[in-house]
Image: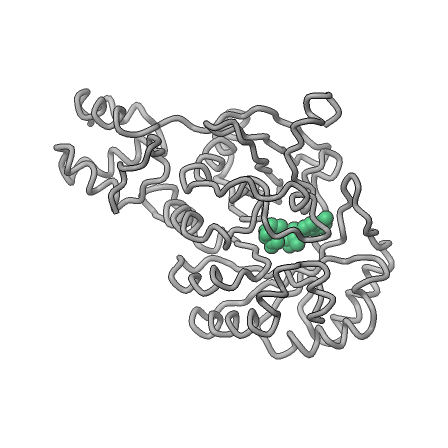
Amino acid sequence: MSILTGMETLSAFSLTQEDWHNLLLSEGGTVHLLPFWLDGLYKDRSIWTKHVSASLLQRLEDKLDFSLPQISQVQESQDGTVKFLIRFKDQFEVETVLIPFHKRFTVCLSTQVGCGMNCSFCYTGTQGLKRNLTSGEIVGQYMVAMNWLKQKNPKSLKPSIVFMGQGEPLHNASEVSRAIKIFNNTKLLDIGHRQMTLSTVGFLPGLKLLKDFPSINLALSLHSPFDQQRKSLIPINERFPLNEVMQELDHLTSLKKRIITYEYLLIKDFNMSDSHVEELYQLLGKRPAVLNLIPFNPFPGSNWERPEREEIDAFKEKLVAKKLRVMVRTTKGADILAACGQLKVNKLARKNGTH
Ligand code: SAH
């Protein structure tokens, strides 16, 4: 790959270890320089002062963009969730969310500006797809969130990652896969592959590429075990029906021996009947699966309803009685529209000061 041929200056955060190796050598650096260079980039730039010559640094700065995306807004929820509005060079914005768990945060990254999947229950979908993010912009979001955390508390652990922000990650598979390599590499960001989870609607062409990704956790947005009903929620199910998606997932599990999480949106009076329990059992009973129930999070203009606590518990118990492994996802950040499915950049509303 030629890394320096695009119209725009390439982000330094979109380069893999191999790219850096090649670039440093071609710019007159030595192999021994590589670890210092990478530590300087990802940990502490003062390392460069000691190990990198001013002329080499200048040449690299002329070729690459070392800046990170801008934070244009920060909102903090009562439960500790932090939502950033992140602005890129071309002024497009996405949301990136830090979610507190016991000892460390998880960062929820966006992979596209908007989303082209148009799922009927998701706020991002109403925005349409504006463009894909580059690997540098995906890694950039992480760096911005991590730096913000570090400033608050220098001892904070590196956040783990979920690709569950705006966008369908497998609709932008090549940039997402490149970002995962950069995250996962021990010389770069060093985030373990089990510290990363990618969630997909089942975008089949991207799913087929997953076998070549570092083996991170995978979640499928299932939402209904019935093809017709799933189609009404996730239009792409028309092109890539559930049975074909499941075949591909089976192939992946046999290849990589992993458990897949099935995300299941809980919508009142819609997908929580006994026949849903039975069909979920038929679908997942013999598969290495965890079912993650997500009570619907409302957003402005949404016309689905969130079930009551008792309905959620009753549905869960019926699934547990079938010996399925079930978890209920707790909602975080709903007061700042930062929960699952609530991410949308609404320029107009922001201008009016209502968002
Ligand atoms: N496009 C990917 C990743 C982004 S969404 C995907 O769909 O999997 C991350 C999760 O939030 C998905 O499981 C999605 O179905 C869920 N979600 C979307 N809208 C939601 C809403 N309004 N309430 C609760 N969860 C929602």
